[in-house]
Length: 299
Image (cartoon, rainbow, N blue to C red; front, side, top):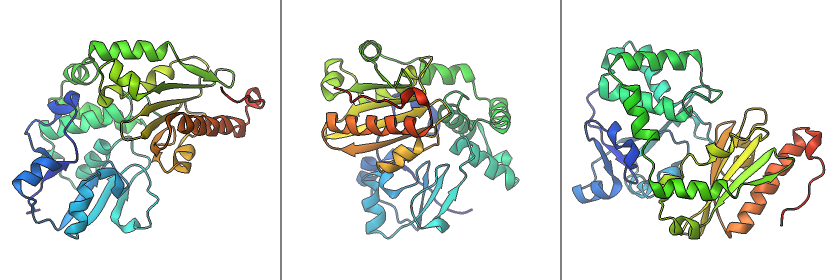
């Protein structure tokens, strides 16, 4: 369409995802600042529904009065609906972009590098095609992307078989200290800054840890609490599909999918954890499950 485009992330691409940037087009905010910021008439934010999600990049957009548009599959709380392209039924942004090009009759533009990014988007956002938004269309799109050269084994190895020994040791520690409540229907794990430093792991390496507790037989709701150095607590929430979890995230100012959501809260780690756990207990009560009507405070 005759536009010069720049792909900018606030932070560096995680190690396990660097293989996706085949043509090395992604630059960080810091790198772009050294090169000199481009004159921009518009910015498109992918897989994000709030301007706060882009961190310090926001200052550049605000200072230069850049018009911002969002493409996402999570509905926003913003009133600027005309600036949003949202499909809450889509499994991932990769699926949305594929369907958009298909609709425009421009599917031939999807070369190997684009196909790889789309496939990784769908694979990761569906948790390997497991989440409820995974549809027959999701699988058909994935099949077409494979026909364009994407190697599923190589993708798997890069994303899921790159854990460090320290990460595995930390996982063992956390799984040895799973918290259970509500007759085993609520489970959560707690990662303090002390534990993170003790095992020498990075916040990036903790992604996906919550999925481990969702493997427990009776668990319906799960939570993962991670303490950051800045005095904030990152909270990931999951549901097996019977009870929507996004309402709890929205209550605390977060967002996400119906059954996979999260938020970042400021405050004391223990106080934040207790508040969210209590909200999850009450959600189980409201779900009508008689097994959790009588709740006892955690100590």
